[in-house]
Length: 188
Image 1 (tube, rainbow, N blue to C red):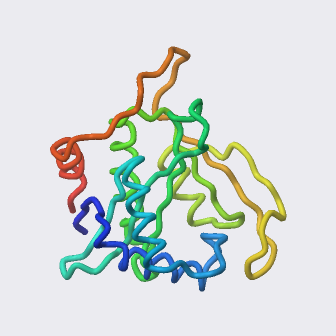
Image 2: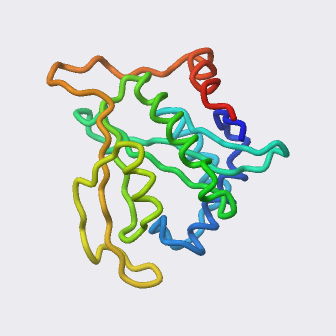
């Protein structure tokens, strides 16, 4: 797969992939499909926080995407983000998710983030496995949290990108050159 940073023009492909999960899977607790207008805005807002990565095959078909958004709106949380990753149904288990996630984590560290959190439907063994393999720890489970195709719980996974107690430097966007250099290490 070829990794790149998304733009507003990619919203249609991202939306099509995400809405498949909305309609057919519990990886998202969203029940009503999103619209293209919502996802064009979502792409713009996501890119304000961190890179939104795409993996495409040689024909340009979207195999998956990964991104991060603010963990919480208050300023004291500025060094923590929530990660999101989705792979095309036929690309799951082929290494696309791991490739996207590793690149995203390196980019987030380079931006100055300290913590990455992931919210995972409980049960979701495949998602738990990839998070554990990447070094995340499950730091909490809430049972009976949401109803989608039956009652589900929610688990919270945490990955520290930095450790220490010093006052953190502000997070910062990366230049296009920095992003391209990092993504170059993940091209298959």
